Amino acid sequence: MQAISLAEFETQPLLNKEEYRLLPILEQITKDLGNGYRIIIQTTLGEVLCARAKTKEMQRQANASINSKRLDFAIVDSAGILKLAIEYQGSGH
Image (cartoon, rainbow, N blue to C red):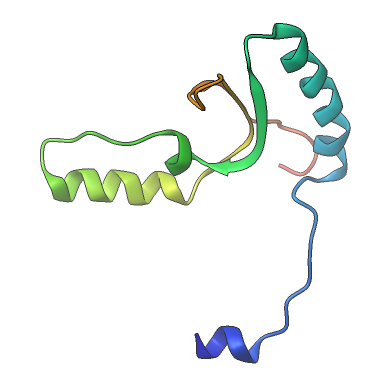
């Protein structure tokens, strides 16, 4: 908490310019699909996946590994369940 209290923060965009140009296209496709599908941007894999493993320690390690990875775009159904993950390989990658 001390490091946070001593730092200054500024906002930054969630998407790069290429991803931002892709967003309205994906939003329209998602809308056209109907059925309550929604698009989520820049979410961690740990938000949409949960590891199951033989031991609690293996499960913890697997979940910790995916928590640091994120999806550029995720399409979820009306219950919030991941249906499609999109990793955009633009010039920023």
